[in-house]
Image (cartoon, rainbow, N blue to C red):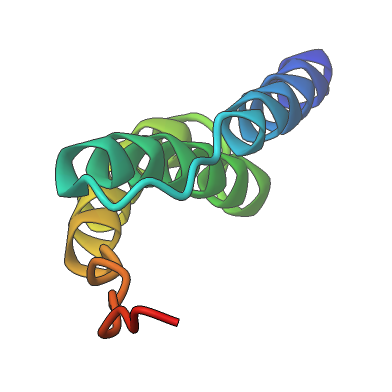
Length: 87
């Protein structure tokens, strides 16, 4: 029971730290890194709550991969710069 409680608090701390690092930069590499951190935190949390033990590492690995892919794919396009008028 104590191991499960420690794992739950560790997952909650990891989730809070990863969400604190959220950015909105258009750089796909930066967004992939932040997405990987968020995915790792979420995957570890879910894997720890549902199965415990081996579920932590499986959730961590799957979360890193899926979060990094999601972060890289969803990079926003550069802002539109409209025509400039002389007046």
